[in-house]
Length: 319
Image 1 (spheres, rainbow, N blue to C red):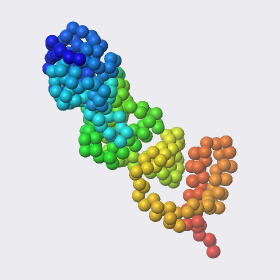
Image 2 (cartoon, rainbow, N blue to C red; image 1 turned 45 degrees about the vertical axis):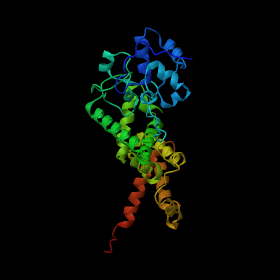
Image 3 (cartoon, rainbow, N blue to C red; image 1 turned 30 degrees about the vertical axis):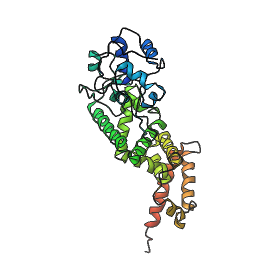
């Protein structure tokens, strides 16, 4: 079938998405998008956003109708990015530039679909979410921008270690109920803000180090419960996340794990008689129906008092 070139063929703008350019082609030729897709032999209702979408398209027919080379059309699609199960590319519109949209309502640029894009490369304006709720503070905005830079650097350089840390940070947010699975490409501004801020924290490892220490060390977890009795549910969730960590990320090895397990001095010790006595005293004072964290705190105070008393016994009066 011989396909004639379209009578009107506006040039694609720099970094314009293919589906955006096809919409402008349909408007320039006074037809609907479905009619244009049918003339080009494309599947109606399916946007050609990814490079893999061109595999089921007749390239000769498409190139002859729009007057562009195959490589030029492929350059207008989203690349295939494997970012360690991170959803960094949006197949739907989740952010936009108000300045560019005011001039060209149908315009969609490729970098608007990248999770690490926070500023429009065409005009320099800040990109806004399609479901913007409020104003982000300057401090949080700076953290979001820094997190976006860290994410872009890790994706471009294919840094598996950093991408793994970012995946952990997002998983921890999901466990706490603060973010969804696709928070990085969410239309909700709050979701993207907290996800990019968590990536900024994850790049410095302090955020994950605390979670690991609380989750994998029972002694630290008990100390945290005594210090923060009202945060018991959050600490228990952190412990659950740490236990699932090795199963979900088997390629990451724990440092000196085998040596620690084989060490005979790390065997679990039975509770001492003084600890049992302190626990019983705490139950007698506060009652068996008292809060368990209050019981633990009182038992620790009694146990420490007994320890200090044995270390510094009361001198006997020999007179």
